[in-house]
Image (cartoon, rainbow, N blue to C red):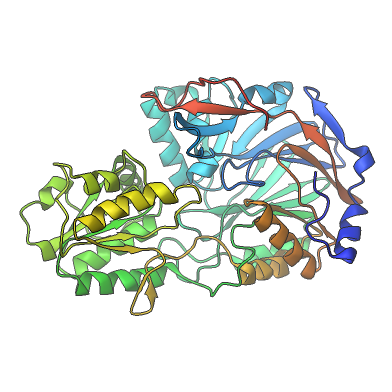
Length: 493
């Protein structure tokens, strides 16, 4: 347990005053029972790491889970495809776990759901339409769609799950329909930010609902669990519209074939590339199963209304004049079986790329994936392909922007929500520490920098870490069934 976020005397004393170490307890298999006068918070991922976001909220004898993602393994675990909490750790509260609420459909927030529901964990799942469409496809593929309880809420909806009253708040992020959650109980309101940024022109959906955030702040917020990804950076505010303008210039100036590689869930990025390519007389095809699935889901929900149609198959691009070819593909993290790797190796389903052609990696490389990405880019450069990355720009316009808030946006969030206590999440220790310092500077009573599986007790009288639950991790092997079978014993968190 880490009580403070920096060595500042006043800040450390303020934190230590509400987190007495002598009351710390290892709960093991006997979880605390949350009372009516408190909210217990148990972050199971996203602390000290980027990924595997699971957060449990306990109140009035019941537990609510927000998100259930995966962590990606390091290179030392070459046979492992995903890491999740061992669902057995939930056994002591299984009969009191009344629901899962999804903030958005990124893998580090939903990747564990189809792997563990309903066989290992079985509670209703609430999500927005886009996240539900993603989950439905996955459950359908593994034959469990008819056995899970999927429920839908629209962005901005209010709903109740047992003793928890929830208000979803429209945010912007690199995926459709991201939401923050104001979770209100008899003991107070906890704000769960999810992943977010303040994008004034997100292209898909509307901008962040600042009015709702201020209203929630006006009503009083006990604590906020908030994204820490870029807390250490005073970044210039960016917008997805800037990438759209860069793509327009890209397709206008390149005379060869152009491929754009991005996350399949970044529907706004996909729409920008399709529109910009079409405006410049190019035909567009998608390569990669995940990208095709998300494009179909987005169109079915009306999220791509007005975006030009695409070709049915990448192979239909073959034979076209190079200046008329545009390809969107998966593989931004160097995945061996993804479309970008196939393009680099040469694949009969994808037009061959060589001298005069351009490949754009329009994404941030997740730490740990640098070597795999560089191997693919080196292979492309060896063929004479111009390779541009998310760090590059065209005429001053970025080819990638972050979906997470910088320090300036975080300050604005704190000034809107005004929580008494800050609980930084979604980051390494460096990110969490920077976030805690920022939050204290914005006037919170204390910032709690904790560790995974620690139990935080929130009451109107204060906040403190009271102990830790036993939450080992489970390694999931790559397999044709979609990593739904554990193959190694659990390891300690």
